[in-house]
Length: 572
Image 1 (cartoon, rainbow, N blue to C red):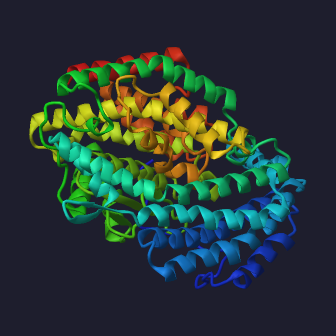
Image 2 (cartoon, rainbow, N blue to C red):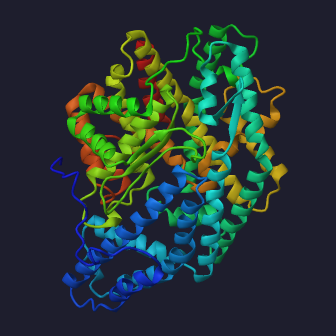
Image 3 (cartoon, rainbow, N blue to C red):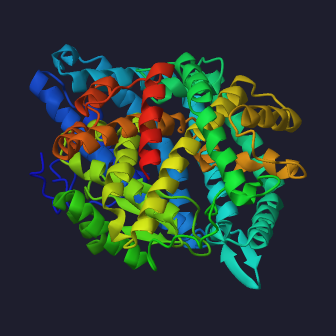
């Protein structure tokens, strides 16, 4: 499983070794070769699929680098121009010709020779792509992509001014850990002031995105964008009704624990009312934990941490550093958030994040490190389709890494009490995140089931859903405008709609992976890595089964997992 050469790139056998994508015209000959080829045998079909995959890998990596460079420096007009050129002058041409290639596969008489589970899933995904493709949606997709990147540019440029110092919002959020309550409050209102300054801009952007997305769905013959996306995202393993069951299970099994945690927090802080700026500070009013000093320190300690887990995992991050595939520190003009971007030709992905020194940044780094490991474990799979991971599996990789790596966080905290505190904070954040995932997912279902809603109706529904999944011990009095606007901080709503419930589903799986790891480290880690090595060559259920966990979000299963987490918290 670990006989993987991290340094090897995808070998070009179909595309010229010195080929570079400069414009659409440079790609046309390769697409025409694929379109014109005679698929007169199972062997010919197999080679055609390999060649098509090679071309797709090259295109996707080119698109990836343009996105990475643009998000690393949103103020750079040239990088913005390069990315926009790709999505306006190249991608619109790819969609119709890809549809013709899909039809070529579906019409091939040797299609039935594709007998493995992985190959059958390719056919299913191609059938889905054919089902949703409409020529008239191509310009809408282009317009939508251009609109989506405006979110990062808008939010990435926001700067807070605290005590005369200008800083990014991620850095300003570190004041939420300050023991001085007045300092936290002042920082909270400064951050909210900046967010509210772009409220109308983001409302306009979101309204526009909803209209475009609904139009895409209607053109493709769907009642709403939610139903369209379930097909587009190849959600073969669950339905919207399953999502609603997930919401209900989180509400009944997790929210009571959240209420208990916030009640205890209120008592420990000895405050008359628990405010939003009281939710991150240490309950004993100790200074915020500092996991690392600089971005390089974070990388160094992460490599050490991963080496203790398994030398191969540490080697993966070390090679990413050597290749310049890490950009981890927060700075002005950098897009918000964090991601691991797979690079299918190079084989070694890119990690992007906005670190400022806190425990949350440590978690983000090991989270994205889990994604990176996943990318590298699947780099040598035969087809790019097998590396295009479902989110439910991709997030299992990252969230499991958070928890397993936690066993070696002494690299970041040499003080035992600090280590216990960091673990406790992370476990409580996991419990707290599950209702937030349900909140965002339920909000999205309503938005796209009701695409003609007004802003007032959207605000009312957001507050209703937010209250459903929030602790009853948090006091939002006199803060209604801030509460009503919280959803705008969620990048996924703007840039990757419906990509969020996977975090909740995968979090449950990750807790089970961690439980296995705690019981038997070697077996738990091996089964986890075996599952990751499958890529998307099996169903979600089969991949979870390989990791020796369940793809299950029933109340009973969630109850058992929460009981395990609670016991681990009690031990701390």
